[in-house]
Image 1: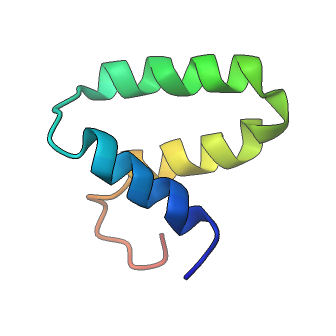
Image 2: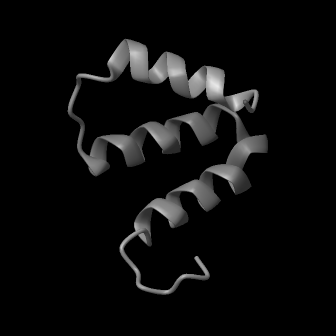
Image 3: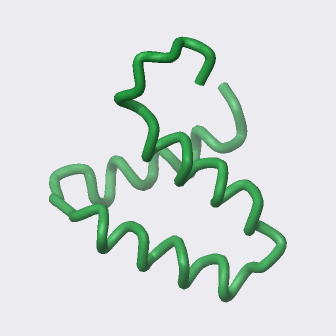
Length: 60
C-alpha cells in the first residue's frame, strides 16, 4: 500500500456516494494548486492523465 492510498481511501469513504462534474473537479484542482504551488506538476500530470484516459494509446 502506498502512503497516498490512505488519502484516496478517506476520499472514497467521505465522498464516495457524491457525484461531481469535471468542471467542479478542475476548479478544486486549481484552488489546491493556488494554495500549494509545489504540487503544480503532480496535479498537472494527474489532470492530463484523467483527460486522456479514453485514448487508445497503451503508452499513456
